[in-house]
Image (cartoon, rainbow, N blue to C red):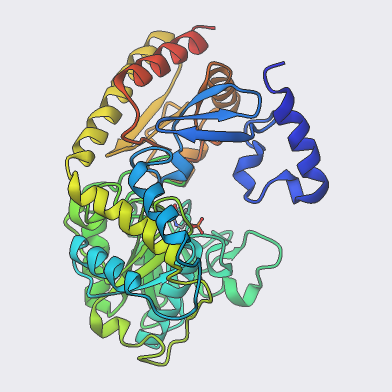
Length: 427
Ligand SMILES: *Cc1c(COP(=O)(O)O)cnc(C)c1O
């Protein structure tokens, strides 16, 4: 049996880990079946515990821009580990990574390192609230900013004036300060702004959404938000945990030309180790402890192994800025191949793509926000996912996730994937 050992490991894991995993999407709930357990990985591939090889389209959900076990990152981590793994005392590495990140990203002077994207976003809104002296934030349905309480909010019923918790454990008190708008819909933002004048600290969004599949911003959307924020003293927060150092060296700010007041990072900036960060102008960042009164801290923040991995990753990018062009071309090639295969089947589908992010939705309506993303046919998605898994292609195990291409993927790998998709969809 192809997944024998993975199945046994999953059963065992379920005895001691809730749902057998440490992050829900890994459990395959959205697609059914048993998750595969990874044994090792290199470049574009990983091998599971049963010895099956997969072409990997999630790259640890984004961080591995150059593929698995990228030599420069490995070397940096191994060399660094021998000198001590954590101190809770400053190191020069933190300044080096900060200098490099600040030099690559537009419009930021200072950066604070944390341990995850969740921490970065949670801290960014605290800073925005402290800086503006206001309580409420606007987020968009379907955008993911980690699992902090303030973000686990869904649109309230009826008039969308404030949100309601979408997880037990999130209090109504927290939910009332998070307002929900529709992605790519400035009117829904205006309605919230009008009803909550002078109380909004920040608008936070994924400048290119990747957590409801890939959804690019429509023309004028980001610009419209920028204008409204500038007019009303609201901080615009770009959550670039996914897009930062992936869409370009300066992330979505660079490729869209729209500037945010606060930017959050994760994933690529840690090169595969747990790193998050948030960054802004010196003026905004001066509100942060110990320089200012807004508290934020972390025992392992700026950890030397994580900083070394991040440095090696960003230096690899700086040494090879063409990587973004190559990734964009590979993603466009995959798009074209899948498009041909899908159009031949006659079934409804949409393919969304931006840079090295791409997703397939089985629906006839263009996917531009959470509602249209949710209109996808889930049985079709499940069959597509499992068909490809059985043929050695690992796609995100949920229709609401983007694929992340990595530069280790060859055109042979892409052709292999397209051929596998043709086989699966021919049925
Ligand atoms: C992954 C992600 C996060 C959360 O990061 P974690 O490191 O998983 O906590 C936040 N925002 C976006 C856009 C993400 O893709």
